[in-house]
Image (cartoon, rainbow, N blue to C red; front, side):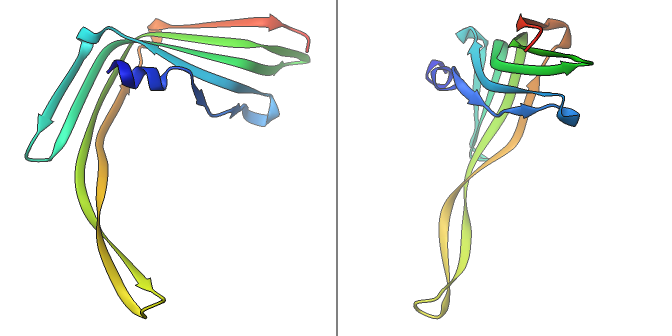
Length: 141
């Protein structure tokens, strides 16, 4: 699991535009910290799937470019969001599927069996009482 977290930490998140052109949240990165004893892996041979449950994650997101127009005062700042006790429960199922296409070179319909990865369940649990927001910067941009 630590390898997965290393890949996720520092991952860029999409930019967010606020409604009515009131501002934006840009240059976003996410970081996750967790304890290894809070991870549970289970396999299901009948479904050919792996279920992963992770509890007590600590999520940190930093936005380097937060802008919001509050009445007539433009705010330009950084935005830090911290969330404790995040839970993640998901299942990955491996199977195959048949792909159909028309081959222009042969003039015939073709088929091929290819691997397929399904995610039949993915639940992210956030406790709103465990969220902290910190806005730092200037109030006049």
